Amino acid sequence: MNSIIVAVDGPVASGKGTLGRRLAERFGFAYLDTGGLYRAVALRMLRGKHALDDVGILVAQAKALEPSDLADPALRDEKTGEAASIVAPVPELRAALLEYQREFASAPPYDAPGAVLDGRDIGTVVCPNASVKLFVTASAEARAQRRFAELTAKGEDVELATVLEDLAKRDARDSGRASSPLVPAQDAHLLDTTKMDIEAAFQAAEAIVAASMKSS
Ligand code: DC
Image 1 (tube, rainbow, N blue to C red):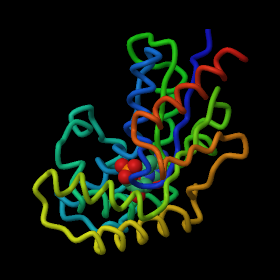
Image 2 (image 1 turned 120 degrees about the vertical axis):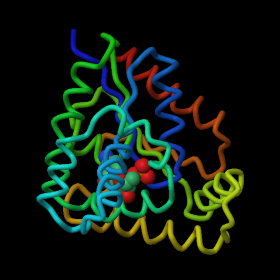
Image 3 (image 1 turned 180 degrees about the vertical axis):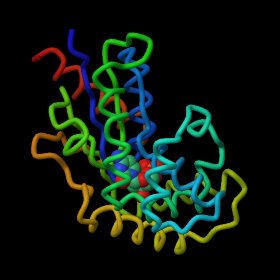
Image 4 (image 1 turned 90 degrees about the vertical axis):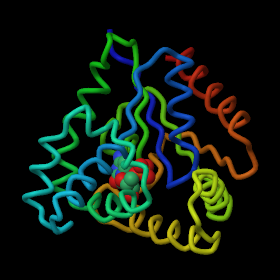
C-alpha cells in the first residue's frame, strides 16, 4: 500500500511545525520536520567553524547526519535558524537532503501508514505527488508576535521590532532564492492562520486532511 503523504509548507513561524506534529499524531502518521535537517547541517558548520558557503563541506555534513543531530536542543537557537536560512539556498545541499526526505515519505518509519513532512518545498519539489498539501501562512506581524512570545517565554531578551526585521529577512531569503523557493504548490490548500489560535488552525487543517483522505 502506498504511504499517505501530507505536505505542510509555509514561512517561518506560520505554525506549520505545530500543525504538522499534531496532524501526524491525529492520523497516526510519522512526522518529519525538514527544517531540522537544514538546521542540523548549519549547526555542524557553525560548530566546525566552517565557512557557510563551502559547498563541499556542506554536502559532506549533510551525508554525515545522524539521528542524534536532529535531537540537539541547539537546533532551535536563533543563530542556528539564521545559519540554516543562509545554507538552505545551496542547490547541492538541497540535493543531498532530498533522498532522505523522499524515502521517509514513501516508507515511513515504524510502518506508519503515512507521513507528514513540513518545510518550504515539500509540495513543490520533495513530494509533488503528496496526497494532500497545505500551505500555512499568517501576516508577518502575527508571525513576529508569536515568535516574540516564544522567545520571551524562553527568557530571551529581544525586541518585537528586531524579531519582525529578522523574520522579513528570512522570508526574503526563503522566497527569493533560485533553488526551491517558498511558493505554494498549485494544488495546495491555503490556510491563513493570522486570526486563528492554534486550536482553530488545527481543526481547519484536520478537516482538510480528513476530506482529502475520504475522497482518495
Ligand atoms: O522551518 P525552519 O525555520 O526550521 O527552517 C530552517 C531553514 O531551513 C529556513 O530558512 C528554510 C530552510 N528550509 C528549506 O529551505 N526547505 C525546507 N524543506 C525546510 C526548511
